[in-house]
Image 1 (cartoon, rainbow, N blue to C red):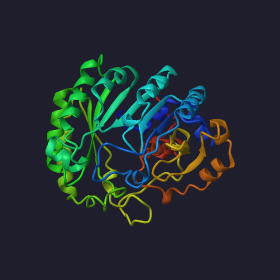
Image 2 (cartoon, helix red, strand yellow):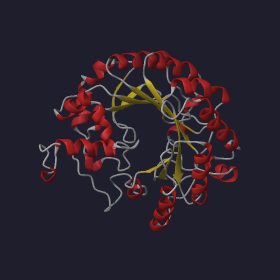
Image 3 (cartoon, rainbow, N blue to C red):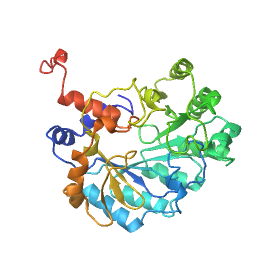
Image 4 (spheres, rainbow, N blue to C red):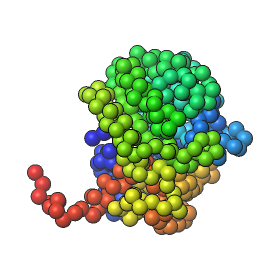
Length: 356
């Protein structure tokens, strides 16, 4: 089982049982979007539209109160993610410490250009840190992340985190590589670089047709056979201490991620969204969505509690009106939905009751 496996739902049997019985549940995991600004200017930024607004950040007291309630109702993990660089939040370290004190696991997607002094508290409080690196050199990094000249300091932060941890059993350092023709030549070198540093995995995904794509850069235009060859080269680098990860379906949908875009290659077997019982998104204005890309709002945690959101008419209306055929094709919980579908609708050929 790898980090992308939908079978992780089996570690949460109460949620699995309730979901199969069509009962609503509080989330196991929430993504928190604390700000809408960034110190990099990625040419494909998926948050491009939101960053055109004035700088905004989440209300600290309201978020902490909501997460405490969440912990009481079974919340296990928080990912710092969203419309900006999470480490720029004005109370980032204070928030990290507070979440940790409530027994909630944490992970973060970061561009890595944070002060080195953040490394020690991050190692103490986080389960994993994933760097959005997207290059193996300063020149390429400056092309795809804007002329920040931060590549060397990002690598230094990665080294520092790795040196401070007790080992990969307690703290994981990974790298995500958004693949585009602008950085294709650096990809294999980037994987070798971070493997040599001691990182635990290298994840590749294609640049998806959304956000700043079409504004700051052209859409993904690479030969599928060439991409497959590159991924095979990367996969050969994997061993017991280094994973190479990617989701094949994302390479089928990256230029046609939304339902109004014609795509004959991608097909879902499931007919409903199971993930909404496992994962929520909390936005910087404290709106709560049950789907990030589709922005399916179910309430607001400054005005409502978890319980009032879950029991609201709006929640029921949103859930009832989800049309899987109209959903975002690049869906991150796609594998989770597939796993739950197999549990709910097992194929005859597996002979499900003949265990052992």
